[in-house]
Length: 76
Image (cartoon, rainbow, N blue to C red; front, side, top):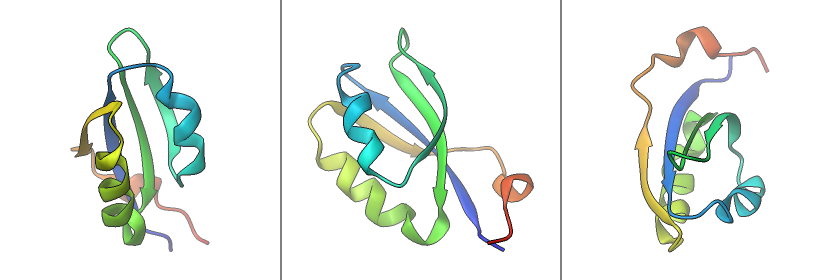
């Protein structure tokens, strides 16, 4: 069973969306007007992905989702 952790990324510009494809983020929703996206990552990689995203200037803030991800865990 692969543990997932929800992630919310707030960004300054929509240009960053192309760069986010290089990270292991499974994007579920993008709000271009509110400039945020939601998705999920493997729980084991969450800390390193969060550190890398916080280094990018076009990203305002990275948060852990408050939604319990147990229902989205998949066998792998």
